Length: 74
Image (cartoon, rainbow, N blue to C red; front, side):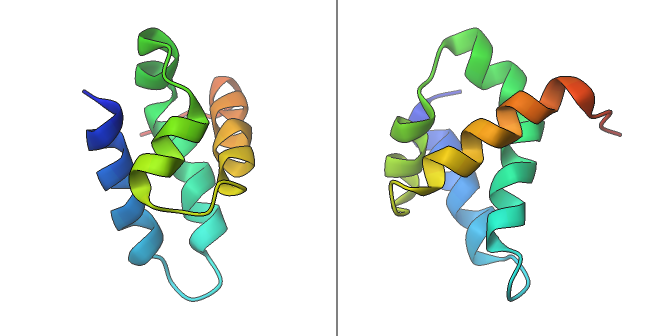
């Protein structure tokens, strides 16, 4: 998977989030895709940029990545 592909997925999750839950979806994206992001050594800022989102959202993405080791996904 490339940064561009991850950016596209992030953008879709952001755009399809219920009103008021856009940031939550960024965190969830970070939790779900953390293994790929970590393994490929992608930078959150580059993924957020590829998604066309404001650079400040890279902070939320980093939080989701960090949370991923404490969250069980199904």
